[in-house]
Length: 293
Image 1 (spheres, one colour):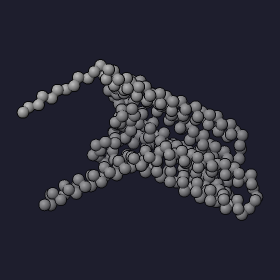
Image 2 (image 1 turned 60 degrees about the vertical axis):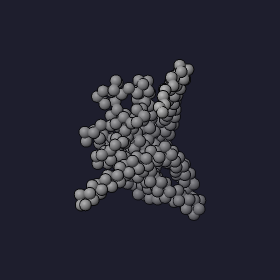
Image 3 (image 1 turned 60 degrees about the horizontal axis):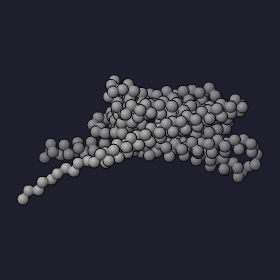
Image 4 (image 1 turned 90 degrees about the vertical axis):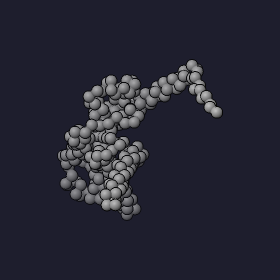
């Protein structure tokens, strides 16, 4: 006995509803991108204005060094929101048709470089701020005599150049940044990785980001414990301690935001790289076992 299977025709109402839903989801995605970019730019602009005014007002070296690093972090985050957000909105507005507007892969490479730089540089600067405060609290004489504003600017430049170098590594290695599955952003290659170099970029990015967060946590913990010990032992220099507590609270806020925003992404990139590594080892082991047998 044969059964005749017929394909049910799609009604115009169902097709219209499907198209409307897809259009609504795309409009929401564009709206969220614009909102997040706008909020990030406005909040960072306000923070830059406040920090610049505070930097002019406070002339104590221990305070000015901290404000200089904080200003650099906010400025970096500002341009990250501005550049990445603008490209994301453009991609959505162009219906994510990368083949049409980015045939040479230049925009994708710029997007990927900005994603890596704006991800690592604020994490590096946050850890540098934590190290600077830890030295200032635990070794105040060394901090006041050896760590000058010139040294802080040199460390700041070194951190930024290192973040740029890491972001340019794929380009220097003649590798392209890849369009991700959602077709809305570009990053290192994350699927069907068969080359050690692609795996290296993922693991390096995740390692450096998690290392920066770890350093921030350790230094902030040491700084906080040291301040609490000083507070319980002596009632002198209360004004100086209040400034230290204020800066440590700001550092804790920066660290918490960084952990919430970046830890899941960093762990995901690390797990992708390590799983690929394990799969590679297993596949090579099976290959050699077959050769032996």
